Image (cartoon, rainbow, N blue to C red; front, side, top):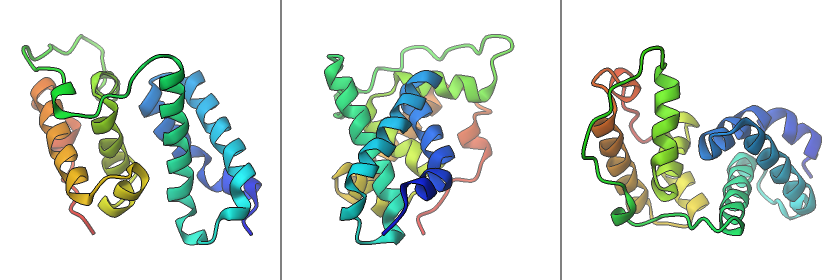
Length: 171
């Protein structure tokens, strides 16, 4: 059986990064990670595959985040109609770094698109892992990633992070 202390040491940083990208707030991300480890501690005895523990923790974190959104009265947006239109490309304010602008755009993006984008490009999960975490088919994951990238590219200056870094291919 896995020890929750060891899990926390091994995955705390990556869970915090994910939580921050989902919430946009340091305090909310810290709370979300803490709630994740509390849930994991309660359910640790049900873990059968220690190789999938990271995926399991990320799933708990996402589910907790969605539950928090619902409790606040925010409905996570999932359909393509929920992607806000791209009427005008913003001009990057002086002194705003790529990572700050990317976070602002992520916070404008509906949850159903933001999550696979974060998991694939920033946390290095496979299509299959994302599919399992979100409970959607792999084809839907791929479609949402493509649409989310297009949405960001339409709003982000030409020298965006996504254009600078090589596009990761599925393993």
